Image (cartoon, rainbow over all chains, first blue to last red):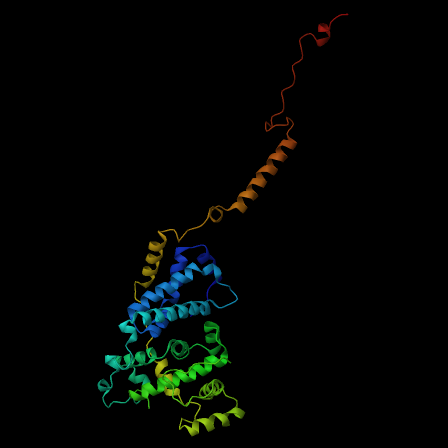
Length: 193
Length: 150
């Protein structure tokens, strides 16, 4: 995500609708992808990404320019994702609660003996994508958010610390535990060795 | 470093937070050489891969996940939702002070006032009428004839 042009920020603060549309166009895919990887459901992700932008517009006056806009945007998105996960969890939402044990695409029987020789090639399979998504969704929200930010969105540890407000050591220890848990799941499904 | 609850999927034999952070650095290849022995001893005891790229396959798989694009109508959807919720007042919702450039109005008013003052100051009539006053007509025969005689 590129950072925000000061002229665009001024127009946003003036409630210029075209500026808002420009901002959404520039960041919609990044925010949507983050929400999708956190929630594992396109409809929920779309709804949540909309809420993220609405929250950004409402609070744009509170954005302090000493922080990077993208960091601030990610922080808003992450907080919304966490709240939505809690809400869905309370509602016992079926789509969100389906972990790899119940996810049809993540069932061991559907995997067969095939083992990915190269994980990036294997990702061409929608089935494998579903397994990965289910494995991510099975992590608790604190671990999930770190894995998504680091390993899916490819953010630096410093950026993740700023976004989550966690100390460096906590981010690293949680990431290690999250990756270890994911590795076990993926090994069980034959995705990795 | 804050205490951290282990993941439900984590193995029973959990490293401390500090050691877990070091293992993370080890696998990322950023752990200082002098601290590697401690991490390698821990990993060896548990049969974990002894290489800075130990969990690279998991990272590669995750990093190769497709970037999901937002639906085409996403931007329109956000704008519609804002319009609907704010009853159309959100965009362009500015106070009178934002809409009227009061600063420029003040400057313009000052310029007009100074111009008026200069005009009045230089005016021979003391008014905005800049024409010279017509000469006062003298009475026929001279004014002296009209003077009352004592």
